[in-house]
Image (cartoon, rainbow, N blue to C red; front, side):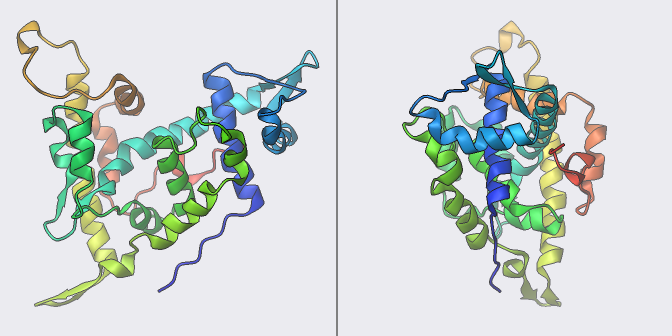
Length: 275
């Protein structure tokens, strides 16, 4: 079955707008009303943010986030934190063995070894299939995954143009189209056909159980490390990764029990971050 995905101009404005707005809030960055040469490509996004009342002009000189814009960023970051916490586990699944790469995450000595491990051909990315199973927007899931991978980096020359008009948006649609979908997961065993939905139910249950155990271990590891345990050779997540996860994971793991229902979609994802 061919899956058709589209990204309208309004969709691009929404995603590019929230990305730029989050940068303005977190980095306390403002843009001059008279944009310099490099930032001139951001004008359509800033105009869209102005129309939505997400930014305002201060002292007739600078674009700055409005109170509404800051609230919008807060809702987006809550959604993004949940994505990082609960979806990463489905990014590398061995369907033949029924195992998850993240099952051995804390055994690696450095991030390079971990990423090399993820490059193994046996791992399949099921995040799109899981998102569609739950009725979530796969385009937004891909957008968030590319944000997590710094594909919208602000250090490269020309990032302003790429944010709205660059080929990365074609990449988003291509990733969605090329992804594994539920019908690709169907198979037949001695007892008869097994649907892709049944496979995803099992994958989601196993993945959530694993992620809950990893969150509990990560929470324990984030506490002060006893002196005698130093040099044990265990790998601790980078401070950035720990903050991203633990902001969402501070509560007891009991709060994650609803996720064991494959059809569960949290309130954070049931409504838009747009205001």
